[in-house]
Length: 338
Ligand SMILES: [Zn+2]
Image (cartoon, rainbow, N blue to C red; front, side, top):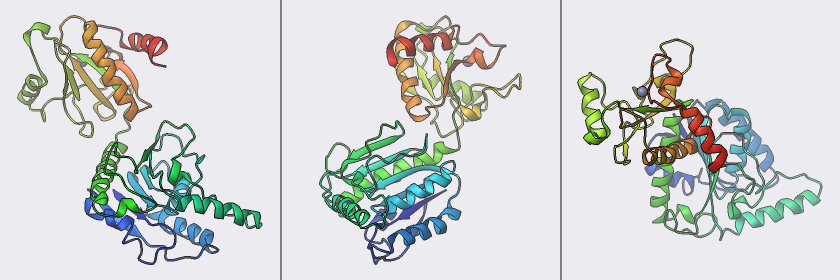
């Protein structure tokens, strides 16, 4: 899996002093794409050529990281390769604010509310359009973020210090010390996308431990039991204790061990599901269910297509988790969440 770095318009250094500055912080393989220096008039042709050159290099699970005009190239690549891309990170994109992205493709837009360059670009693009040239959709998303409501598109203002060190203007994020901070964030984000890309989680599965609630079992205990069975440790991705504490189990990107497709109906397997285990040998209580609801909602933000089920819904030989999970979840969704 590769992170493709795509620079902006009007750079003569192949992007070394913009997106290239992120290289030390990336946690995966990367490739710089230099589409050369270009004047405004030739830009559309140059962009089209870059799309043609980079397209065949995109492999399943790859991430695109682009600055400014590079976002235009990303948008075209996304039209053709959305099924292959794990995600796109755009820094001050010179794209229209109302740009739409393919469904379910994660997009992180790091805009900057002090970026006047993209505003200038937008005006330019309008002026040139008036001249009859029908210019290339440049816009001010780099200053305002994307405004169309798409749950898989996130906007962050790098001029504010909510997440990382504030940056100024169109390229301020690439300056020290900001670049160190933002670079680490971008590196982590793309690694996470790459790891989850291939998993295509279809089910979030609720289990119970079938052990007494009052015994005080924790994720650590389950970890030891599962190790004794010769597994790689805890098979669940999360645990809710008898006192309704949420504990971390196996990380999401590491295939779990909690459900098997015994009836071979193609429904439910460790390869396409995440599992949470509630400590009880009767039914989960209200406090435990409330915590479970929080975990499920958080996971649904990462895997919006996943279905919430109980173990027994995937394996008819099981009674786990002693409750009708789809009915419970269905009522919650209907009454409280949406
Ligand atoms: Zn179970």
